[in-house]
Amino acid sequence: MQTPALHEEDWEYVRTLLPADLEESARRTSALLRCRNIPDAASFMRVALAYAVSDLSLKDVAAWASALQVAQITGPGLFYRLREAEQWLEQVLGQVLSEQVPLAAGGFRLRVVDATVINGPGQKAVQWRAHVSINPTTGSIRAVELTDDSGGEKLSRHRFGAGDVVLGDRGYATARGVYAVRQEEAHVVVRFNPATLRTCDEKRRRIYLAEKETEVLKVGAVEFKITIPIPPDPTRSHKPWDSAKAIAWIPARAIAARTRTGEVTWVLTTLPSKQMPAIGILGLYRVRWQIELLFKRLKSLLHLDALPSREGPTAKSWMLARLIAAALAQRLVQPAGPLSPWGYVLRGNPQASEREEEQPTHA
Image (cartoon, rainbow, N blue to C red; front, side):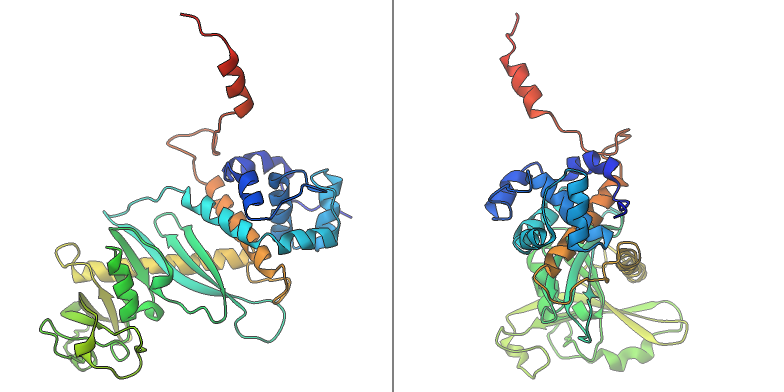
């Protein structure tokens, strides 16, 4: 078998980017209760990443691991290990992403959310969805959640911090989604369809924004101050319900502008006008396109859409390992610190620290 180009020489650098408690977390999540055939959690992660990025079969990856003395394991043994490692890989992915320091741009901490479909062999239209949050100033992933086809796109699926500004497409423009973001003291900038979102004026009287499209000029932007009633929990937003039963009212701005073809585009934001004018909001929404570029990179470079098995026991582990590889890659291409010549995380050697503690101290 020809050895695949898995960049073995870079593994020591990659290892520094993985969580320091890799061994502990592998045992806590029952991913590696016994080290038979696989010496440690780092070796297991190395094999999992090799399987995710090489497009080799489990049998071939096991042979590669044996040839490099990473692990002495068979294809069926690796299948079993990966099947039991979903929780661990999910936890490691979260840790790798959370360690990346977010950057501020334009005075705002921007977050873009969207979802992409991941399919394997078969005719099923949607098998898996990856719900992703990114930092558009760096193009880096901030959080990922994998669901099956029943997992819908919604803002409440994600977690935000006070002061964050969340950008999303029309699928995220729901009253409950806006409410969930405001509950976390963050703001939204989302494209929306005025026919599917109930809007009221500042006195809580129903207004129909579609009827106001005649006021939108050929160039420039027009905005309307609105309030959004939040429906009671038992009621779905697309069914009739009484606005008097709203559990909350969210002040917002509806901003409209025409495209070159004359079509009116509506953008909703909860940012006050004193923080950003209407034209600025429209420009900010354009940043949302960065997540589409990320999905294109994940599918064209990492082949995230080339799921080897449709709904098999190792399908989710494969996707998580490939997403970990993407998260590690975005760490490797960014400096570890200001003017850092290393490009990877420097960690102390625990054995060296113990030896230093044993040395006598001289006054």
